[in-house]
Amino acid sequence: MGKIFNTQTYLRIRLSYTADVASNISSAKIKYTDGDGTEGEWDAVHEPASKRVYYDIPVGSPLTVTSRWHFWIYAIMNDTRILIGEVANELIYTEGVDKQ
Image (cartoon, rainbow, N blue to C red; front, side, top):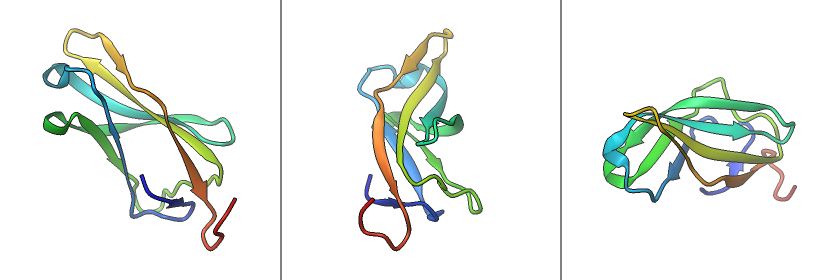
């Protein structure tokens, strides 16, 4: 991911996985924790051919907390097993400020 700003809404959060289970994933989410400790999740789109999931941030719902966020994949397999991906850490910057 490139630099992300707190008021940005033209944004896709995309995460990859390495497990060879693409055809067995029935649903996927991107879970997150923001700098305030708030946890949440988004229903993600699964791209089996590229072993990635993504979520498009909707207009009006920017990542408002300026801090380090943690994102990871949470996927449910066809047989109800769960795949949890590695955490991706991203710093969300304040618009117009070069450093935090």
